[in-house]
Length: 176
Image (cartoon, rainbow, N blue to C red; front, side, top):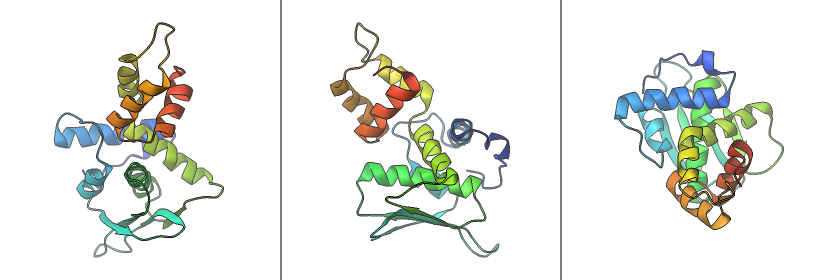
């Protein structure tokens, strides 16, 4: 992906920003395939990915200091793969939106607005609303809702946690 693209006009909304990133990524790879691979997006942005044994961190973003330096994203290998994928997507947001600030993402604790934005961005990047709606509609019941056991199929399709999938279906689509 083009590291020089200016996404600032999308900073007002995590969904708009995620959609812009996905649109650019799709331009480069052709048709989007699910689950979205946030590790490939990091690679396409020339961001060094390192996997580390963190005790209390999901991950962190370290911006380059100068032109000769590189941006680094580190992810906790002790976390489940779906969580590592979410963290990678979250750190992409920091690279794009918080470019000049090192960001540390703890496993627990109260999140500030920057972290909440990056979490929402990650959810939209991994589960774009249009595709989420399309997948949910495959399993909708007579009452217009999706049964919890069918949510497993949707969460696997997107490579996200069951809990995250339920949350997005319930609160973004209102179909759970």
